[in-house]
Amino acid sequence: MKGIYPVKYFLNPNMDKVKSVEEIWDDIESYSGEYFEDEEYTTDHLDVFIPLPPLWDKGKFTKGILFTQGLEYLLKLYPNLKTLFFTGAYTMWSSYSWCDKADFYLACYENKPREEYHKKKYQNKKDIIFVPLQDADYLNEYRIAPIFPVEKNIDVLMVSTPAPVKNLHIFAQAVKIYNQKYNHKLNAKVIMGSNDIIKNTDGSLNYSNSPDYSKTALDEVFKFIKNDGKNIDFIPHVNYDEISKYYTNSKCLVLASLIEGKNRSINEAASCNTPVIVFRDHNKWARGGYPIFPEGSGEYVESFSPEALADTIYKVINNQEKYTPRMNYIKTNGRKKFIDKLTSYIPYYRENIPEFDKTNFHENPWIDYACQAGYQLSYIDFLYDKNPILSRTRGLSKIEKTLKFYHERYSVPMN
Image 1 (tube, one colour):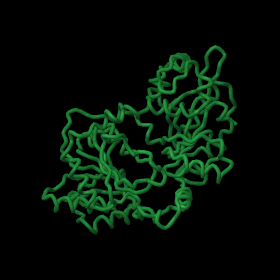
Image 2 (tube, one colour):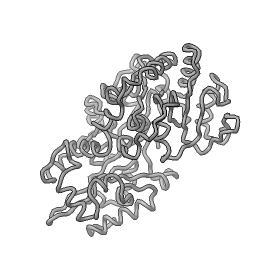
Image 3 (cartoon, helix red, strand yellow):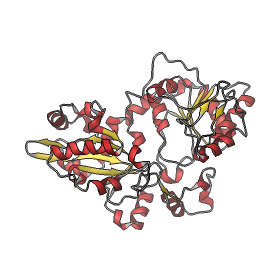
Image 4 (cartoon, rainbow, N blue to C red):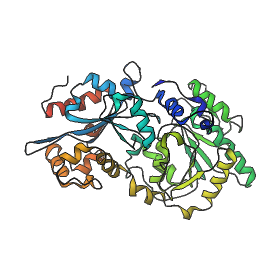
């Protein structure tokens, strides 16, 4: 992860009053949340997703699809990778990938003026396909789903790392305002996903061993509320297999950031039938008019202020019957919809898959037949990680084993 982190944008939704949109796009592009060769955490944290394996039937070979947060590095290690896969790059930020060797970018949002500006500025990227998806959209909607029984006993949930970009202090102020303005104490929880933070028996947090950026964010929070766990219940870490319980039992989920990548918790909450609350200005320059969530799945906060956020929380909590997040979510999202959308943007599959249907790729009979013949899995089983070593791996040693399997299967040298 490299570049200039645009911290001036964290709390300022009005940057367009002092800069042109092109200058703002350049600022967004100045930082990449990708993994690079010379970063120590790349070895253990690099992910590879394979939503479609290479396929072979009756003498016809069709490339699979692979996307990763470190494509530049992987192509250096395995230069023949593109013989087997149509390769995609993404960054955990609203910028475009810095890799100019990708076949496609997971670009978060469809924003044609921004894409055209980028390709004009970087001529070496003019043939790369921009797809309005990110890894956050590659959600297993059956794993992250409502649990039974449904007990909406959490008023408001936030799932957020303790980083300044997340604006936890805005959320803390909103909770405080809500409690005073509506004469009701919210049951508010924040899941932070941090193993560096210890929750004391009295509900307070010990974050002395956290990175400096976490300390900065939490110090700012506790300027507005006490560090005693009484206003907001901060939960350092929750196992992923338990996260659906928290979403399901919450009346709403809040995202307080103005700029970041494509947030995962929005998808997870909606998939668990929990309405989401997001500032309307969230990622507004990166996404243009592209929606943040499906209609009927939550509310936008119209102005960037803690009180406006508090008022929107009140609206959602007291109008639960208005929202049908999961129904709306699964109509257009989840893994089946992900692969349908991804392949619809890539001409290669339209030209090489028999009976190609861009709206129903996941049910294509040839795909299912070839996948079963080649890997002893139906395509749906493959897509949903029934044999995860073939479809999703993390860490360079495991990635090499997976890629070695595919290279040997099709007699392609690794390098």
